[in-house]
Image 1 (cartoon, rainbow, N blue to C red):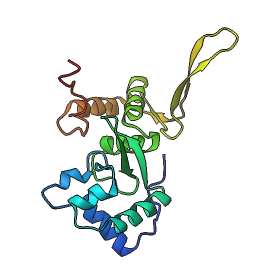
Image 2 (image 1 turned 180 degrees about the vertical axis):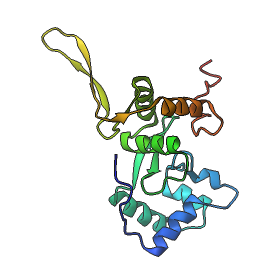
Image 3 (image 1 turned 90 degrees about the horizontal axis):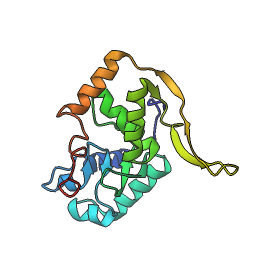
Image 4 (image 1 turned 45 degrees about the vertical axis):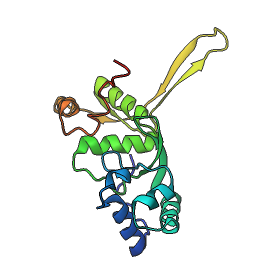
Length: 189
């Protein structure tokens, strides 16, 4: 896991712009930033400009600087869309440790589905895996032609029974950030 005590050089104007985009107060604020995923919902800077009163050039410069500092990157959300995700190491926007850890995994692994897979492996094995080195892939053995699942996992620590119960209870609660994403849609049912 990354150290969360890092210092980043944002000017006061850039920081105010970022806070203005994250905490947008107009009627369409849900169309700019999703606090549950730390993601900017709008795909383009012009779409964000249309909803807010900030200029596209200032938003573009902010996004470029955040990308250069590795605080903003594209991830795949639960719907399969590529969106910009603000680093939860920089601005977690949640007080729940389980949700914060899930956001860390989503940012590091680059997709919602990979973070769910990481979460499932952690809960089933009772171990907290490092999501920076967590990967699973399929390798073809050229001698036999067999497909072998290769998994690389570095263990940080063992999870206690209490932590596992809290994690499971939180996943079933209404405060869970992915509660709407885990529901089966009408098309799939």
